[in-house]
Image (cartoon, rainbow, N blue to C red; front, top):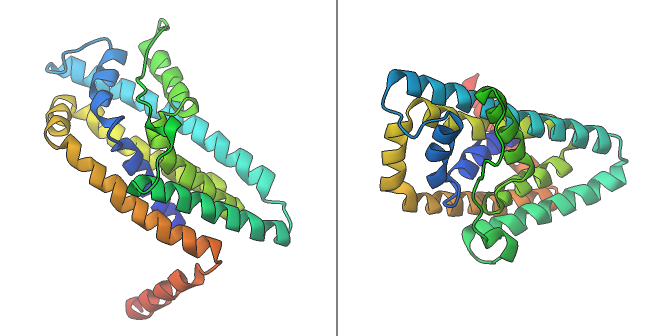
Length: 235
């Protein structure tokens, strides 16, 4: 079942990247960190990609530390407390799933936030790393529903909290690196298909609602039955 959770967390990271209020500003933000608005030359493309790597390392560090903290705090709770954590986690997942589908509205998640670089260090790599950390701590609200769902999932499976958050960071970081490597092409693709990505969020919201119900009712073993069937055919 951990594989299912980790896969969900990885996909959640990708969905967070595809959030309509985050995606359009990513190429320009990475280019700005690299000190250039022109990604056409080989040197500039390399600089943007390296800064993207440090940016990803920055927010991955924060998510990894958060996972360690959750795992340390929640791993020792009693069985009765764990039951309630699963129920609370399930409700959180359902709640954010309903938000992603569009059935409920949450004011502070609707506000449009932009990344702003107010201070730079002598090293652009250090700047990118620090702002990657700031990106995780001051997470853009409209993508926070997906992260909140993963935190709810972590509450229902405390011993896997670190791996869930790390998997989420990998899912979020992978498209950042792709955009960093192919900034010009990614910018054109985002401009062309940006509006369609909202359906990705809605589809993932449906998945979260179903997963949240199973977590709340402690019926995740139903998904385990699929694993048994798969193992039967694989062997």
